[in-house]
Length: 296
Image (cartoon, rainbow, N blue to C red; front, side, top):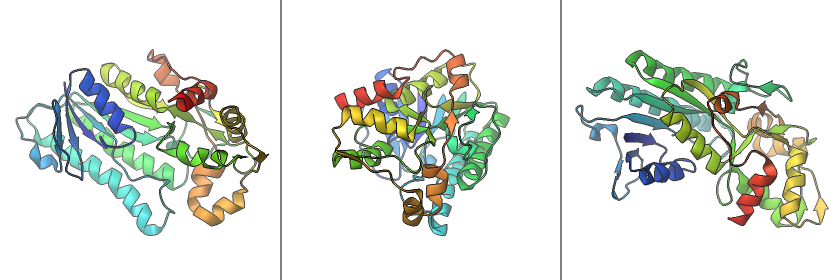
């Protein structure tokens, strides 16, 4: 197959692109930076580089500015929104332009779709939530679903917190533990819906190859953990000397609105449709995931 990817040089996109290339697929990656082509991989800085008669079998859309990189100022919130919606719109324009339509569009979203909902179990049929992240995901998914009008199979990847050793959220989670300080956030009872990066890549591949797959998929591990449970699991891997929870008020002062939506409130999101589609997790629980991460 010939796969077009956005976000193909990112935290998830890089290993996903490499795995597709290993399978013998051609991969074209849309990137803001110049990269050297190699083998079956081509880099482009504009979709104008794709001719109307070029065959693209599938599109994987992972582009988007990080929600957790900076404080949510008005300007940065606009950057978060535009990096997702504008990219999706140019992909839709490409779909309209090419003579042979791709068969499938996999478009990233996030479990932020559900908003803060405490300990309630959330499968893909749960209602949308409230807040900036929820509004963003709703609008992002709506844009992607417009590709159905062109006959594409559209799958929405509602990604949880993706964990791996040297990049992503785990770097910040591990920081105090490196100093011998075990901690959790706030009261520690909020639920973290996580997934090991290897499982995230494998799940996206599973959805890509399953021609019956359509609609929203929660890309999360089947056993979410509370912040306290994560702390306990981390202490098995890291020697710590004291336990010092991080007060919620301190996080609100440090990062503002983002703290309420991403850090202090929790979501128990379950991969119901992914499991029903026959996907088997390599790392179903946090202990197995952390053992793999620290072994790597």
